Image 1: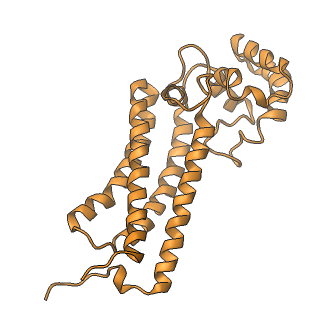
Image 2: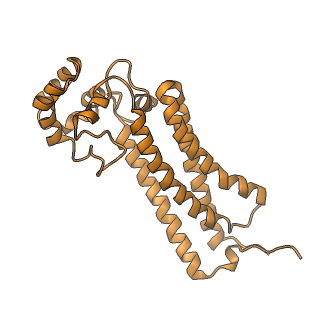
Length: 240
């Protein structure tokens, strides 16, 4: 007699409800993460909206200006209380972004207008503008530093891996071709790893920014398919 595996028809209504609210909550959380991603990275090239140039500047850096300069000229300019502060920051960057001038002129501006978002406690994925070392990373031309990428990537890998594991555990109960299911389970993990690796590669090869976008899209799409397929089979799928 062939071995029987649990499917959605074998679980109780209470378990179905628990699985469904979990999946829908994760789905909503992922949509909010995409919105946060948009507002975090858009405008780095000085233009409204998220573009491939914003991703290049984030990881590889700009050939024309620093990340801080691009932000002050673009999306972050409205956050400055006084318009004249923009010229003060840009002149400091142009003069070499030295620490003595930072302590006297730049730190008071950033402490007043920027660090409520740009601090590790509020958002670890944003540049840390609470001290000179963090500001210097974005004041000079170049993308994200290797220590910053390591810090964000380990948080990303730990957090997303747990989410994909629990989504996959529920998706296992779907009634479908076993080989298709096995491939579907692996794809989001593969896409997540490719996404993180592509951050480090893009730091040295700007064209790899397209891989960052595609791998992130693949992870989101594959995770979304698992969520939708699981919810559908829990409540609407019938098999004789």
